[in-house]
Image 1 (cartoon, rainbow, N blue to C red):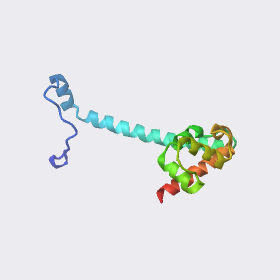
Image 2: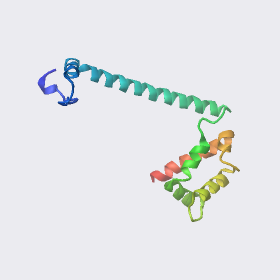
Image 3: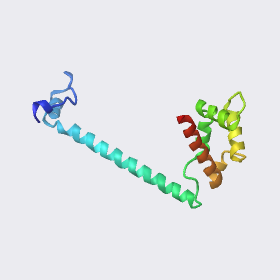
Image 4: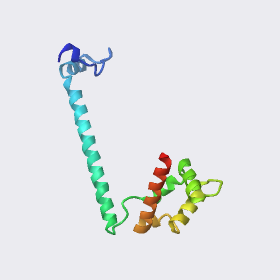
Amino acid sequence: MEPAEREIIGTIPQACPVSNRELLLKHVEIPADLIRMIDAAAKLDRRRRTEIERLQMELEARGGRPAKNYAAECAMKCSEPAFKAFMEARHALARPLTDDRVAARVRSVLAISSRTELNTSNEAAARWREMVKDFDVWRKR
């Protein structure tokens, strides 16, 4: 490497044992190689997760079980202030905007008796996904 191209990637404290210091100085490429390996593994993991999600959605579309735990996702959304505001603005949710009132309104709008139906009914899951899409669009405005 040319002196102008050198970059500090770490410092070795005085307390570092001499044997470790020598190892680090003689094999400075090891940390860079490890970082590249971790980056490559993370990229591969992201691709695999995307592919798994695509296959789960495809299976769901063909009548298989829902791709996600939509009931849990719904429970989390019902406690988000932004989702509460969305339900008030778009689905006539009356105040106070409590988690229970939001959950009841979501069940009413989706025509389900329990959030567990989001994991057992493909039609209910599809309606939930549409509501989440509408929420995302609403939130971006």
